[in-house]
Amino acid sequence: MTKRRKLIVGNWKMNGRLTSGLNLAREVADKAVAAMPLAFDVVLCPPATLLWPIADALMGTPVLLGAQDCHYANHGAYTGDLSAGMLADLGCRYVILGHSERRAAYGESGELISKKVTAAQLAGLTTIVCVGETLEQRASGATDEAIVQQLSSSLPDKFHAAQLVIAYEPVWAIGSGEIPSTDDIRAVHRLVRRSLGATGDMIQVIYGGSVVPNNAEGILQDPDIDGVLVGSASLNSDGFWAIAERAR
Image (tube, rainbow, N blue to C red; front, side, top):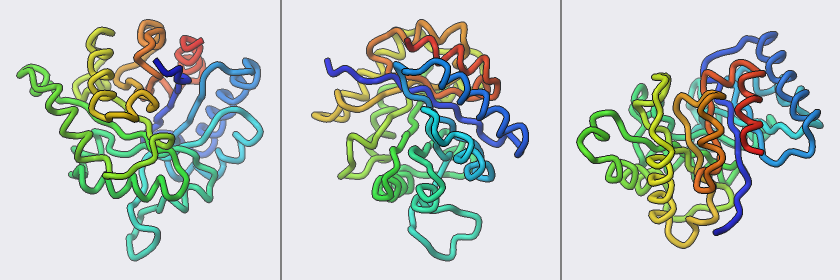
């Protein structure tokens, strides 16, 4: 099996103002510098308003910057949107695409997400594409079908495997405090790799949904799980770093 480096991503969602966001980013960066050399990669994805100041705060540290979304066009009359190139200009290395909150609240289709993946990869960004089943799909035994459908619709025919991360985020687990068993997570991750074909073993597949320090070790020590996408627990530097250290 290909040895893949663990990836720890903090998705701040719509949280953080200038002072609090900078303080949080600096605290994480200080912990990362103190722990160098790191055996894992760390990415912070703050709101768009904080990308520029946090890019400056992270400069010279091993912590990388990511965004929470991008538009599929390079430029144009898209009020309120940011292109992938703009994010790259700000110092972003990653972008989250297809999060279930975007799919549900904004009706983002697989076709739209696929176009965003193409644009982001052309701009040099690594794309973290989220997939996950609802509680109803899980209860009816349709998890595998839901995951395969989302993968096939959300990825373009041609993508760069080196710039792709898949985040398995069961919709029912996000913010609920409940998570699938490690066996269940592993099974979905293996399904994702099989669905991706020849490139599957190269691509990082990470887990997201109610990740906290208490459950992170069991998740991160599994060789089929390449990291975690952390939501609310990433808003506290001590808690977030406690999760990251489980990847050692």
